[in-house]
Image (cartoon, rainbow, N blue to C red; front, side, top):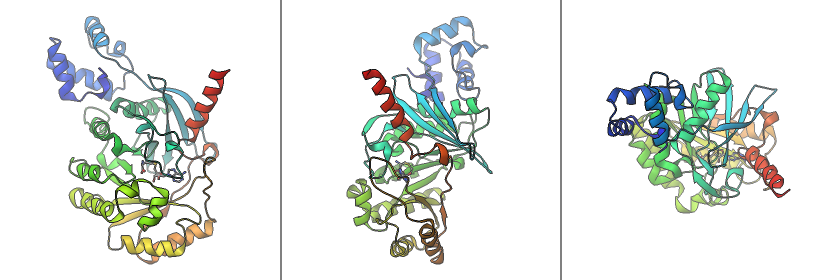
Length: 348
Ligand code: SAH
């Protein structure tokens, strides 16, 4: 049993069933989620006998950083973590004026198949456990020696395709006896899995939802995102509106600009028409080209003109600032190049 994935009630029940007092569960919870202990041996206010019993009954696996790249331009760091079963995942640490932000993966690979995305090229391997999602945040905090102020679930994987683990991860990360992160400091990005978006609105979490929109009509959206065949734009936007109504949290819309596909001024106008009247924010992301596909980004002036057009129609928009340009490549590419190298070495 993976002890860092248990919530407080489950941990308490386990400790009671071992004949231990209830307060021990609180002590262990704080070791795991506040003090970020990586082993039972560190839990020095527990008896040696109890620590031994715990290590027999539970596993406490910590993602191991196997590669860390640091940007010479802005200090952004990319981490490759090795998981207990040998899978590798990618996370990014960014320093902004408002604090440190970590972008985590929610799955190994992804099965959503978005056309421009490197994470989905080999399909889904598996969802991450709550402990593996927390482990990315906790290890980065330990390795940088700086507090993580916000977390975005925008790395590899579709978080709402790993729903139960995601919600458990958020509850653990916001627990007052753990890192006590505010829900407002967490953003979850989805390609638009409608039923889970409705479920998430009712969880009582005050996190921000970001929707990957990428088009203003279903026809174009389907070209970029196979999931658009299953859920039409009007259903997805209704789920966003419901999220706002239930939580009071403004929804963000992500729009990756792919040259010649969705980046004309006519598209900008159509997007403004689609979102008009909503309290929202559009994040424009000039597409990061991946070598497996031939999508490119348009000239900078066109990106600016796209943004200006949205603003002219009263839609709040920003162009995503590129962090760690020198260590970049799109999300998921660092992992791919590491894996490719690995398999060559294995063949040799
Ligand atoms: N599965 C989630 C998280 C994906 S990554 C989702 O779909 O929202 C976060 C954002 O980056 C998504 O909007 C995704 O579509 C976008 N993205 C992925 N690869 C990209 C690339 N190569 N260039 C630009 N944006 C990309």
